[in-house]
Amino acid sequence: MSLLSWSDLQTYWSHPFVAANILVVLNLLGALALGMVVGFERSYRGRAAGMRTYGLVCMVSAALTVMVGYSQFWYGGQTMAGFPDPTRVVQGIVTGLGFLGAGVIMKDGLNISGLSTAASLWAACAIGILVGVGFYAAAILMAAASALSMAWVSHLAAWLPSHPSILIVLKFERDHTPLEHTIRRATLERGYDIAPGSISITCHDGQLEWRFTAVALSKDKGASIAQLAEELSKTAGVIGFSVAHARN
Figure 1: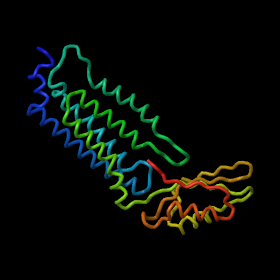
Figure 2 (figure 1 turned 135 degrees about the vertical axis):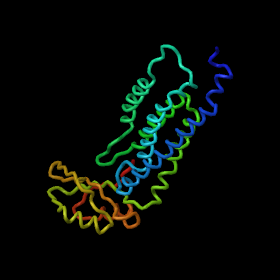
Figure 3 (figure 1 turned 90 degrees about the vertical axis):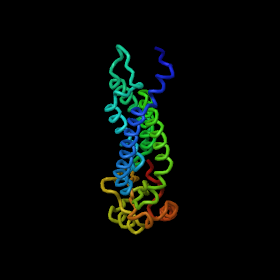
């Protein structure tokens, strides 16, 4: 019997097979929604990993788990003698992808970027696995859900209430010693609060450099980066600074 016969190809779109794909799809959508709920809490508090990252990771985890429960439908319900356990292959793929994901995550001081890209790579991995085992409808839906998440969830997160965070680096004049409570008060006056445990202080040739993450008290109250830069340029004792959004 030819593997490319019309009757064999039809099994991939038979009623039981499509029903299994629909159940997988419902699990993926539910996992995506629940992951976004958890990610909103992180996004609301201005953390690096937000709704997109949590939603994608949760959906991928569900995809890799739920498909195991429908192994009788893998490869169109056909099995080949001597075929190894596919779950061991999946395990190797996911493990190898971890190194690739780590390569796209960049850390610049207290600022982290690339988390959503790493999560999307993991999503692409799960999509490929679903295609490989023959869950074409579920793979198509997951590809669409992943693309929409990357494109539109950031707009949803921007619309929802949140506490955006900004990475601030201050370089002071030689032998000038700033006071922490003074910096905290100045930060609060501009609608921000210093995130607990985010302060990092270094000293080079008598010049202090402060790095910390400032979290907005609310999305509409915090001063803009342009306003912060203008005020910092006029602050006594500050000879250099850097302000940037905490990206993910």
